[in-house]
Length: 318
Image (cartoon, rainbow, N blue to C red; front, top):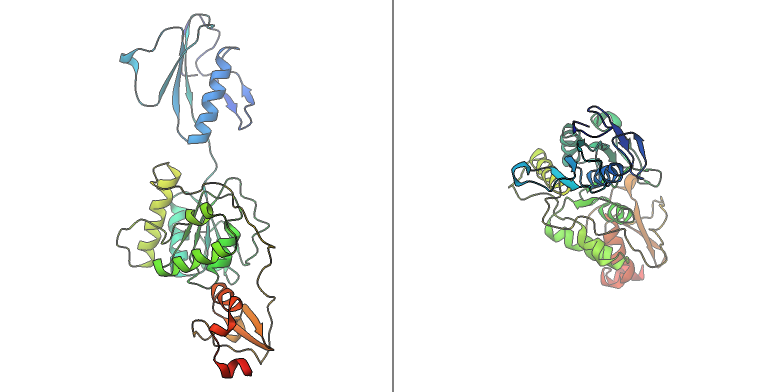
């Protein structure tokens, strides 16, 4: 309570806490004023904006109007005027950065400086290398992560596990999902996500390439462009829909084949021709008794659907 005009039982300095469920601790006015205060407090929690609430029996005056002022005519009020400042107290927005690339490192640093609670996720993540992150998850399994609010997610693995990460993130309620990739690569990833049964509106919500077009070249500049886009979304200024709703998945939900290690694995990706590191071969598929390694889940998926399209007659017969 910042100001009153009698008659009223409230006093300047009276205060209360309104919780997201609408319950209130404290006292900021009688039975007529309190529901209005709760309503505006819940709106402030939703939009993140403070406001000055003026409750009076008088009709709003043009002379008093201004940005951030909400005027309410209260006919059941005792006759005085209450002015109440409503200030939302929100947790830090959560930013999940997927990958260990230079862009990820820059985004962790800039995101933390901008007030985001940053979590870095990657199976080979080294906590010491990402000191600005509040949490480093050295695993692809994020089932145990329970954010207090829908996180902002940026995937920047340079193709190592873009598809897997995006599919997992789009199963959750998220505030934003961006992919650091070229437009060509992004189209391939979107095709994969669609074929895996993700709802079209979820696939369409993936921002790829992520970030505003500021002519970024260095890792820090790319991170800056992404962070600027996150601020747009957070402040409700984005010209696009970042999160149209929870993901809808169909199908049997089967995942990639279990990881195998064998000296007989073919380490040349038959789809794109890339050589796969034997120690880090994660995407494997068997065809006619031969195990093939792939650089990404996307290549593996395309191979499984039509192996003969990527194998020469000699490799098939072998």
